Length: 465
Image (cartoon, rainbow, N blue to C red; front, side, top):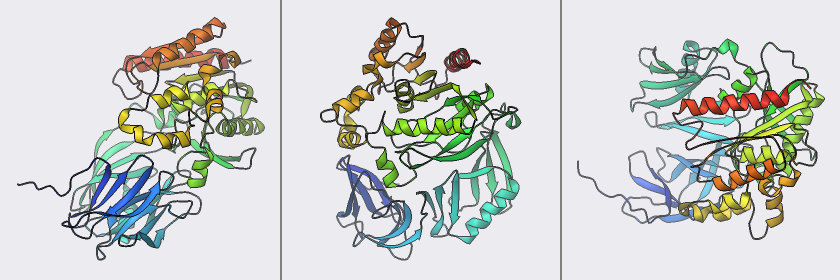
């Protein structure tokens, strides 16, 4: 039971990895912008750097190769645009070969089986997450699970060391799903719980993938969810931009989307430039484009919906959280906007304040944020243009604002003053605040208050013109 120190973190190690025998032989260090792979062939040797990349490049180790102790499997986009699963020689830092890659999207995950001592599968995300199996027995396992749990997405979220007992999570776009125990040797399945048994899938709306070209010929992917039992023609629309930077919308059950579709709105979600999953170039296209080309991508998606005659051009709203809230408020003074109102949940209204709010332990990441969002010393004017707090005179449509006053990423006093300044202009403003998270907190009353107010705001502003 005695514990021995395998290595001491000098303060900059962000990841450790052991080999198949449990020996600590790989580490990743970071200065906030650049990451360095550190390797040693034996535990009694010092770590040495083998390769350094900046934050724009992904190199994520997955597991050591069983018979070649100097080789690791890694997800990498070094010298390529899309991440792939590769073999990496730790002695040289050079790539040996590609095990799997996709020309259109990144490999986002990879599963290694310690029992079988081999890579089981990789995950890539086109319109939804898909697997490429690298092991026949794993393919057969999922084939059996598909028979037991048809017409649903299946995720193995944990397993025992013998890989005999598995915890399974299921879901669809219309159902948050359930959790099961699966016993491999007997093929038996035991249901543990539904995530929300009150949800009736037949009353939910399907989430369909879409794509369109922007004004500068970039292909944008996203999702369209239409209300059930309604003709898809001249519908009121709520645009739902995702938070950021560096995240994305994914296919699956989304309670906000279903809430809005249930109220009769078509819901448009856009993976605008800068969203994750589409390669390094697509991610970089979004750098310093808040309120600019990112805004254009979303407007072009709305215009695509109008051209398809799905959207009523006189009944379009936009609602987002975090940076999605920034996009929503920016939309009200975009050059070619056609939104009748905007709603922001803890939205970023001031890019300068956002950068100042970064906590001390993340200060080394500041240069990364400067590249992605803007440098407050050299990018003053574009950052002001993309900060709604400085653009009050351009806003003349109804606004819904809610904020968590304990959110460290926002200045609640600044947001409150923003609301007061809008009200001085006689702009209709609905304002709510809470001292906890609307989504992940346990305060059901606060969540109900938020969504009841949002429902009323949208109903008033998107009613038949």
